[in-house]
Figure 1 (spheres, one colour):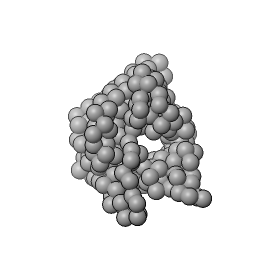
Figure 2 (tube, rainbow, N blue to C red):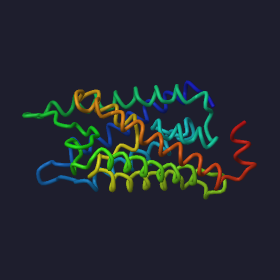
Figure 3 (cartoon, rainbow, N blue to C red):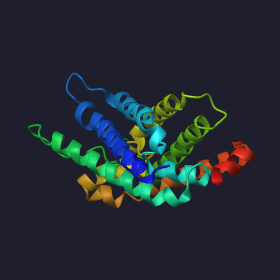
Length: 238
């Protein structure tokens, strides 16, 4: 693995995820007469991951998500030494994607920042869900999303179909999660818009790091213990 190329790939890939997914929410979801709604936004997030998985999966693994990197590291599918550089690249990419979206969005007459696709709980949850509900949702959705990722990229899985499974998996998590938290499942995706909105978004950002990372770590452990072939897991950890 060429680490510098991988980091550039993660930077641009995460920028695309935030720009494309959050852009669908900010620019298209509520557009009069052409609004794509929650389902359209969920599909947009899935498509960003699917397209980038084919574009950069062979370069960096296309994590685009600190929780994914944590889960793969715990599952011995990713070098622990590369974890921090990957996370830095992902967060920087997420901010650039969000900032680019902000530059475009503010050009509309009457623009109001609002929540700018930021994730939130309580009064900032789309459905006004409590902090406890949002924490459980983010942890459980990330847990199953990581199982999809680890399973579909297993050496025993059908070749070439992992990006489709992962893209559809992210679409599904967003279909469930958007009404609850605006669907993070990704600390970097949450950080980008939060740095634009600031205030309440930054004060609630802890949940959208802690819950997804916990869910991902749990998924990595469970897959490693119950589903991985011992020889494969040992080889991946070398």
